[in-house]
Length: 403
Image 1: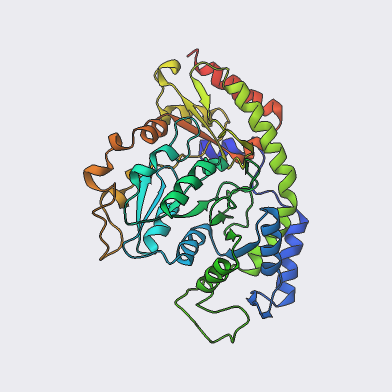
Image 2: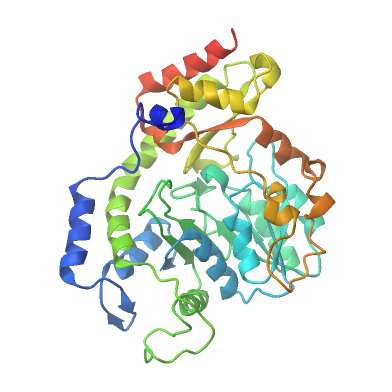
């Protein structure tokens, strides 16, 4: 067992489940209805029920459940007919799926640097990235921290662009009175194993337009239309349906979410205050106007010179070896081999993108490159621990300054 794995044993184990999840899965198996069927001819009921429940929780009118968060982004893009030759602006600091979903539609991602305080897309850098080919923007609410959506919506309105919010980390976040996913045209979510709401895998798209919801549903269910003959396929589509097993687990996890979400926010605020008192440490700043935050992970940025020149990997190792769990930060998209070497879709022209070859040099993305080189992340389950455990983390980090 690695030091990192061993360290996780000192904190709450994730996912958290009980007999409700076990019985939910048993009920699906015993029912014999192992898939959802179609809107007009339901087989199982969990997918359809979860869509209603999650839309209500995120305060949206419509929800389409899918098999994972990556295809949720792809389906949302396809719902707007985004494809060959189109450009989509996305944050440079995110999981590869935020960009690979754009690649899947034959469109071209364009990477935007981040705000050094909030670690999310710097909306002040958006307009210089817009070209005649730009069709959409994907703001990524990294860690659950909202992008400045009010300012972004002004930019999108002025330039007639679609906004698809990547809310994979932002379950339950709230910015200036709205849940993420409701500011733009659509919002996408992931329920992968490490997410704060999970079924191991799974995803969803929320929106407030029935026409868009129907378009997205059709794409995710083989080009079908709701309540039409099952073997009629009206347009190109694929099969991204969520399973009854995933939905059954998500429905029980959604019941547990509010109390976990409350504790994560309380403990995150406590930990932020404690850590920000340490000279050489600063935590991610919640975007002004944020009243709830998903806290998918808890990031800290350190100044190596204040810690005897410790580099990032050394910092990680010291934490893990002393029983404090960590998770790896996402490498900036511009630095990934697939983008640096342009090893992507055949026949697509990526030459006008702001990455690839020399354009992928860190100097062209200075903020995210600097942040990535000196940041550490704690897993979200740490925020479900006792204050005694959190104080232990703070004291150990303080002790590193004395080495």
